[in-house]
Image (cartoon, rainbow, N blue to C red; front, side, top):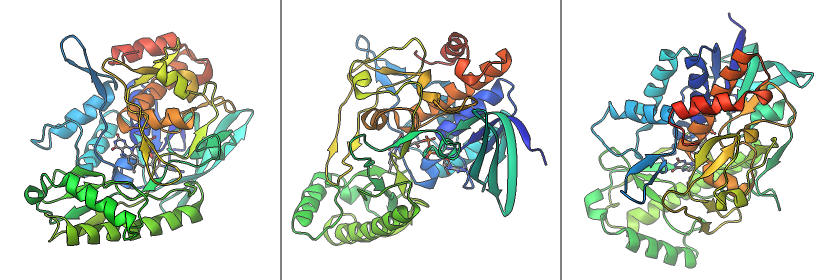
Length: 418
Ligand SMILES: Cc1cc2nc3c(=O)[nH]c(=O)nc-3n(C[C@H](O)[C@H](O)[C@H](O)COP(=O)(O)OP(=O)(O)OC[C@H]3O[C@@H](n4cnc5c(N)ncnc54)[C@H](O)[C@@H]3O)c2cc1C
């Protein structure tokens, strides 16, 4: 069994898969470790769909301008080949899983599923090896460089890196949500009843008949006949890095699924014959640990549409904060042609020299994370991290000392708007 690689990526979400592919495409020998049985991260483990928008429109000619980098667009294009559905945002996670497997293998990424990384051995500010529990087998694997794409900054935590949890004032994180699907919905009968449903929901909440703290019912269409997707449970004030708290959150959220279904079945046109079709494998975690990196992205950077000499990604998604204390969601939407940049230093942890961090756990404040955390921009950050590792490898430098202009030129050639 091969135990030594040039790069080990931990976590197979959008950040991890794009990091692994970007590096492999440039000749790096990459192992990607994922604790579940498929790639896609929150999209498959927590049933998170659809993609939030990854583009803006040009003012002058209303032309769409993509902001996400070419690897994410390639994933979207590959998924389109499976269906006649043209919407770029709505996708089927089963199609995503097979597309990502095929892309990973095509570009030469070694995959290792059903394996949880549990320990990092660090010497002289470098991770020398990691320990993992593979399917029923303890493993020790080493690499020149690592990318932490675990969403929860687990590898960074295991390597002893400093991190912050949730918002700065009280460490509360955005609430967790167990996504679910109802089947047997008469979508035609329901059409036009959205507002009525939410008014009734508010009335039920006021009377104490619904306990879910979420202020309205958040639904999305699904590609399957009679199926509606719900991103509508809400568990606040629980710590997403504490396994006992997460267990309680799973239990509370499952109660909310059935509470909401009962309400809809008994009161809303179109749901009379509906049933709970599926719930996600895991409750979805919007926010948990964020590493302490060489730069911390802030809300002020977002609002001022900041530009950085070492920018490696951009985002224009709403500063979308589901209230960490319970009810309410706050927004700040960016205008046409507005976006902010994310500097490379946010991916560079202060405490370890041969690791980058990618995805929703890079170095930022609570408010800044609320914006770049969506899947297309996590993919973009991942692609940048993988590219940086390959440049560091060719030039024989530490990732923290990488020739950032060389990285940025490669990213620009790959559709980045930095
Ligand atoms: C409820 C909810 C709704 C959302 N809605 C949307 C939406 O509509 N549209 C949108 O674009 N974004 C949405 N988001 C945000 C988005 O889904 C996430 O922020 C994004 O997927 C994060 O990507 P990532 O690659 O950083 O991490 P993840 O997708 O979380 O991937 C991390 C991966 O690492 C693996 N892993 C973790 N620890 C280990 C370990 N120790 N060993 C091995 N593997 C490990 C995990 O199994 C996982 O597959 C939502 C998020 C949530 C929770």
